[in-house]
Length: 271
Image 1: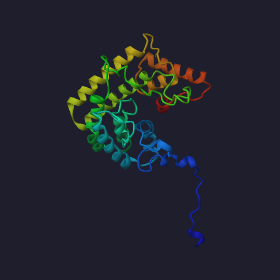
Image 2 (image 1 turned 30 degrees about the horizontal axis):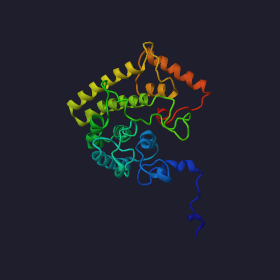
Image 3 (image 1 turned 180 degrees about the horizontal axis):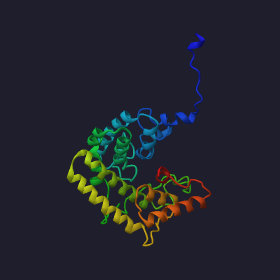
Image 4 (image 1 turned 90 degrees about the vertical axis):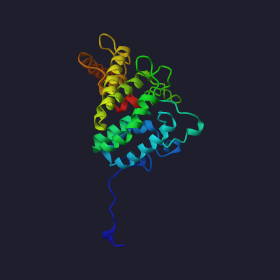
């Protein structure tokens, strides 16, 4: 072999290739055991970063078609895994963040690539999740009877119970619900349906008011007084005015109190 034909090794480390290992043919958690499956929650929290690092538009648009097909078999509920190999074991239960990927991923892809056609393609899937998949209470928030994974992998949670986060799982679920409704009202104009636009704008406003009533004190203090709780409220615009200023100072305090260490799981870290 000629010496000048040899490609010199780069200075890349294994960490540089980690994101690629999550996208071999479907978006996965990590490349071992059952984590090689298409976990929807993992993609939700990583999609914005993935679109920044690599051109994953084609792959993820194709995966959304698979999601919509599996979702149709579950009456609006988005499975926690796509392709849904769990279907033989019974109907899927709706879970926030994992299910919300059908809204947030089209939103992230449009932000990254300006793909309006993909939003139109996925619109019925997005509506089906918010209209049929989620189980609501009488305030328009998540039903308290719904099982939630919440701030999955909170460092304070026991290793054998990764969903036992410090932050109330239903606070996390409802923060994501308000966020999903906000994304829907913003994307509705692309589809060109004024009825949908008005409906989701109204539902977003109602859900935000219900969230504030449920989780915020009259003095603006959030009941989920954790790094994740405050970060979600700030990231999703759930606090405004004096309450927002108070939340910013509170998050600063909570971070300093933990000596600048990360004390957030799935939901809080992405915020």
